[in-house]
Length: 241
Ligand SMILES: [Fe+2]
Image 1 (tube, rainbow, N blue to C red):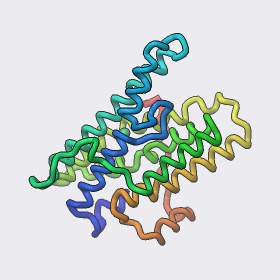
Image 2 (cartoon, rainbow, N blue to C red; image 1 turned 90 degrees about the horizontal axis):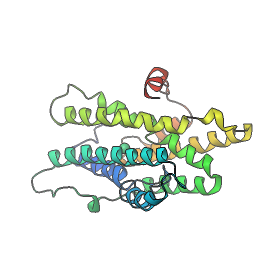
Image 3 (cartoon, protein in one colour; image 1 turned 45 degrees about the vertical axis):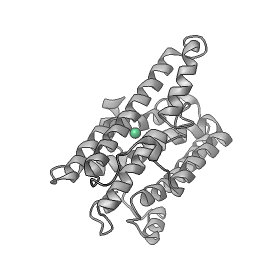
Image 4 (cartoon, rainbow, N blue to C red; image 1 turned 90 degrees about the vertical axis):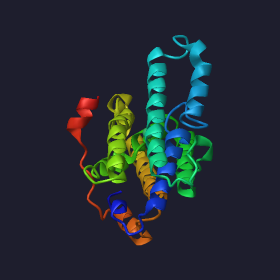
């Protein structure tokens, strides 16, 4: 993410492309919650409205509330990035709307991988997907660093900082309660494998979303560990928990 902002590949066209792709993820993204098949916004709304008659019978009211809040958060992220797109687009470029959004091969593969992990490993697969959601918020934390730059960059920074808080919390959902689940050593090993596999695919997904600022050579170097990982922010995690 750090590479993109000052990459020679960056221009208005690549900015509009990543924004529309981010809108796709916020609206149509799938595979990280129990209800988001068919799109985090439309799929979850459909599934949740079908569940209203089961509240407090087969569906816990708190789980329902959490899911509703999740949908609201994702739709507000869609709104931030769609507003940015509409502010940045040239006059002759039409306004954005959900049915114009498209995924891309690397994103499609990430989603397919998450469903494969859930199918093969059930709750553990879902937990891996929840933990990797947002990829430790790197788009948003690096986007926030554009703060103070003139023009659209300042606006990108503002949108990213609004999304950052929510996404940090979503990632914690994947971590919350894991100690109480009685995972065996083999479960932990498997969870690690699934998470690393998803995070590797996330690098490909983002690299494509941002018009390939990283060469394949650099992607391979990152895979080999030639990158300083961000430190986990325990203080923020506690505040958000
Ligand atoms: Fe989001």
